[in-house]
Amino acid sequence: MAFTVSKSKFKHAVDRNRIKRLMRQAYRTNKHSFLEKLEAENKTVALMFIYNSFAETSFEQIEDALKKGLVGIRV
Image (cartoon, rainbow, N blue to C red):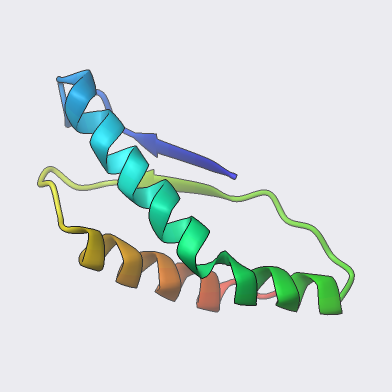
């Protein structure tokens, strides 16, 4: 699992770290159903989430986007 935020879009490390922290928290709170699905099919995946926006967003928006991403992954 990896999370990244573009340095060209967010010049300050504080802003990049905040977004990555929100992304990690959103993943931690929603990973259980995704991991159960993987375990049921006896598979593993490597994921990387890339924050590709010029604006900072709220935790709720990040969490909704991450949920959509995890649901859309075919195992």
